[in-house]
Length: 109
Image (tube, rainbow, N blue to C red):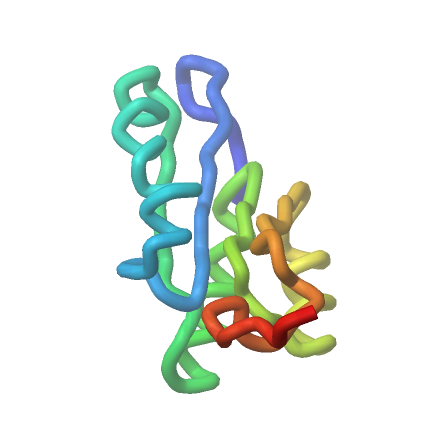
């Protein structure tokens, strides 16, 4: 059951498809030690692999106050399940969400 820590601080769950990606390290990982040093319970989970693993991660969201989804593409069923189990969630999108692969070479204009 979600609930703030004994100090009144929220429990956070960050998840994304690749925890070793540069965007993860830049947007999430560098802040984790600072959150934890201030008593905030911040956990991470990788959302890739089998469907069973994905469902396990989404089901675990019910134990947290805030869910931060970093660049993870969720199916409509996963989105509905997350919405039901997580009281609050935040999506962190990459800058170029309108293109399939932000690392692809750009066409000259």
